[in-house]
Image (cartoon, rainbow, N blue to C red; front, side, top):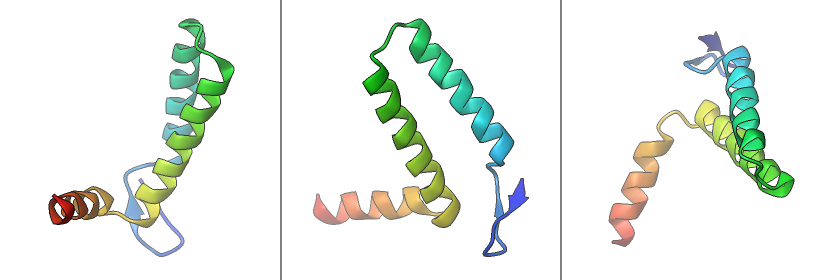
Length: 70
């Protein structure tokens, strides 16, 4: 765990995120996935990590939006 700039404690440390990205990229590369798809996956993962760090209850908010529009 680490403390973000806002003072919140996050479950995601930068080292564990880097290890996860390395594992995921290696997995996609071994499956001979297109480099463009690997880049898209990595970008999506990084954006998701940033959102999780800045908006802790993102999943709850997304669920509320889905229920609102359903």
